[in-house]
Length: 409
Image 1 (cartoon, helix red, strand yellow):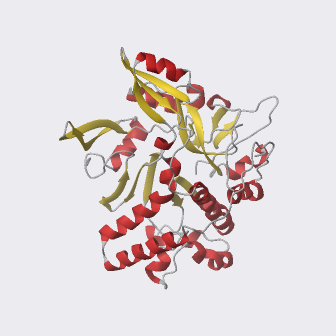
Image 2 (cartoon, helix red, strand yellow):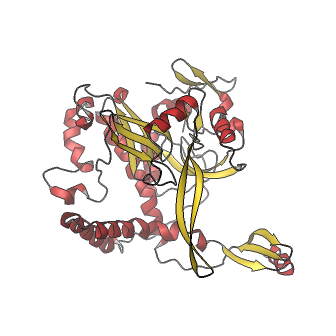
Image 3 (cartoon, one colour):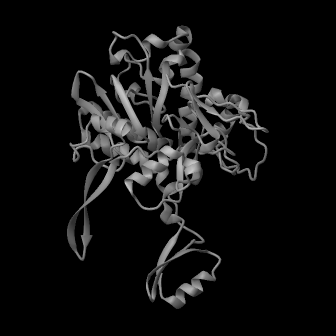
């Protein structure tokens, strides 16, 4: 992306891709993250693969489906300066019947109040495309070898890695020449990539076209969710939605039900494929890292919704909304407890794991001294940014007159 357009997309960087991030380098992740990791005292970190939001591909070749790629070119000014390969495949609708059937069953279960069947249908739908594509067992075969066998494995062209277990036992990973995949690769890939395409279409072709963006801030998001802070009418309460921040009402009413459910068409319209629905509403939201936030109602602390990555909210009642506030103001780390079951020698064993749940470690973006977040930009590190009274401004360099601003309002 030409850097003159950076400020237009800084609040919602449009390139959602995995990036290798060296989380042990202070200059890359920033001082705030580095100190948080050091304070927690976890294992020494190094290169980690993270799904994050970027303004470009950071000098790497990455794959895009055609719809996503056209969107980046047409709406986000991305320039393709080099490509390595183009893959053409036949369009297929072989999963159309499967999707519509299970969505119909899910909607019927919701209408009947059958929570078990509703969840079952949802899990089948959500896992059907990503399972084969993301299942790492397909891409590596692990076997236990003696020292001599591991030496021979090292000489093979498909060798990936070796880990020593004891003096004469090694765990060797090899890349299989073939593997079985029950889902069409193009279906799984297109579904995962087009989900990102629809995500950005909603934001850039609907929200930014008809809303007052000076009163809306995208706080955080996940694969299928996006949370906004909205400065609406002070007396209208948290259920006001976008009502008081609409600038172009004609455009809004023309396109709103393409995305949001029509209240006059029942639950089937609410759960339409590709549609959106309200997940949580509150007076405030405190998000300190991806999948680590709290949403609450000022008048009722018991209705606060808390999210901790990898931890159960119900099992850790000691974590409250105040825990998130203390982490920001006092750098307090709150621990959580996880419980699980494993089978060992034919016996079911219960185990408990303690982990740091509320830490504020956020390595998917650069966290600056005022705790604003900036995306990773090719050629820049955390040291290239400086904090100003108006947000974040990239330090001017002799060969690159670039300015990136993040407002704090």
